[in-house]
Each structure stands twice: as C-alpha cells, then as structure tokens.
Length: 198
Image (cartoon, rainbow, N blue to C red):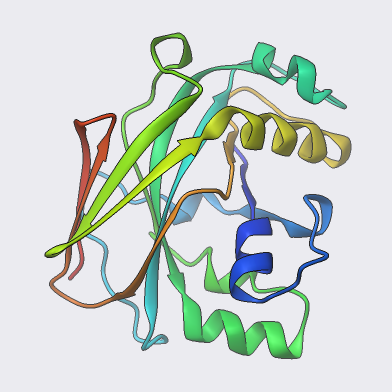
C-alpha cells in the first residue's frame, strides 16, 4: 500500500515556494505513519513546534496508470479525513538545506485516519470544523478537484493499486499543538474523529 501526499499547500503557504506544482510536491509516506487501534499520538522529541494538518483522502479501488483527472473518480468510491502531524520546525530546517522535507511529515504514527465513507453519500464540498482544545477552526473544503488532480499527477509516475491512499494536501492547519492536547474533527456537523496528544 502506498500513501501519496500532495504537499503543494505546504510548499506554497508555509515555505513560500509559489512556483510549486503537483509533480514536485508529491511525497510517498510509509505505512508506518498510520496510527493503529485508535491509540493517541505521542509527541516526538525531535520537534518543539508541532502542527496538525486536517485533510481529505481517498482509497484507490482498482489498478490504474496515467489517469486523467476527468476519469479519476472511477478509481475511488471511499473518502476519509485525516489528521497529519507535522514537525514544522524540522520541516523548515530541512527545506533550507534540501528540497525534501519528507521525514518531517512521515515519521512513525503521525497520521490519524477516520472511518472511510462512500463518496456518493458526500457532497463535493464539505464544512470541516476542527477543535484544538478551546480554539475552533472552520473551513469549507472542496475536496474533489484536489483529489482528482493529485491522482492524475501521481499516476503519471506511479501505478496506483487497490488500497493506495491519496491525500489531497488541502485542508485546515492547526498550529502549535502541545502535549495533552485534544483534537476533535466534525465533518458537515457530524462528529467524525477525535485524537489525543500525549
């Protein structure tokens, strides 16, 4: 299983690489990023500035290569929403020295996945509300275009297989997450995912 993350948002918004495109922003994350058995996220000791990035992702349901965006929806029928923890200080340090910051976004157990739901039960745009302790963040996420464009770009380079996960890289960024934080995610006013930070 591959987990493919589109880091264009991070490249443009955080690192100010305004010429970043989908191709040079793709990151392949190892399976070990997934938090298992609803365990909490354990704050790593190599970062003092942890962010949480909430984004949609789809699960590929059949083999595909060189898929055009117009046909991408034929390759998935389930969507989930994810909390991805990012070592932001480490990311910026890496970005100053090299073009790759993959290790800052793909360390063990940094990705919390909610339950996948059928895409035909969800509108192409959803209201996501994230609560970090007492602070609330809302954003209307039009997920389909970002997913389909990422599938088109990724499938130019990699054969997509059943079970692969495509993360759009578009969502809500929660800054300065600390130990003993609680993150709650609602999608279209539905209680979707909770995550504890230890």
